[in-house]
Length: 115
Length: 117
Image 1 (cartoon, rainbow over the protein chains, first blue to last red):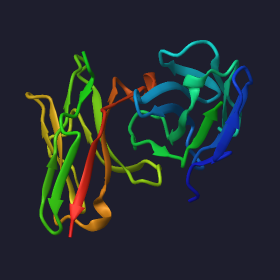
Image 2 (cartoon, chains in turn blue, red):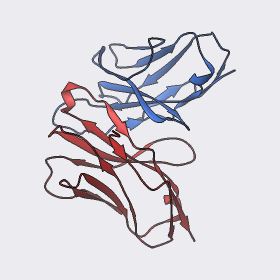
Image 3 (cartoon, rainbow over the protein chains, first blue to last red):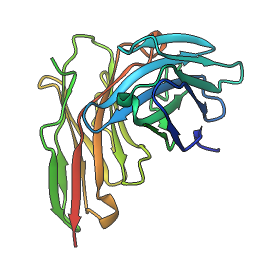
């Protein structure tokens, strides 16, 4: 089975711009979660999508949004970029169903740099 | 309060020796899952091992075992026979609640493990 893929791998944007990151989960996985990883804050949960619906949301401003398509692929959008948004954005997929398996499988991440 | 606490920012272990990475968690939910992930310098998070709150036995996966002490709310990772390739950041994580109500994970701050030849 192919793993979780994320595109692009690296991105450089300017303050005020917006950005869209893409994540393709493992085939058959219906849950996609997004995380922000920074040296100062560590790994922080952004949101989770399951069957095209946002099922859970972390404590991030509304500039961070996402969506999931019928094929379970997910996109994350950040509008009005700030310098503090520079981070590694990780996507993780799992079946998302009661009964397991429960582990999330992560993609390689998108390294976003805001200048 | 922190949901996941890893108190060891950095650890060193001699090659072929065993090492224990500490993790404590905080939840009042009877249903939860505990995970360990490895993050090499390449950045990708690699799943290592899972322990469910209702599991009676400690989880094992090859050289990895999870020392689950429910009353103490600890879920320490034991790596036996350390290898140079084990050098990486290790994160403890918890899924709180039932899976079908959402998959929010809480991660600890990580432990940097260095294996010495």
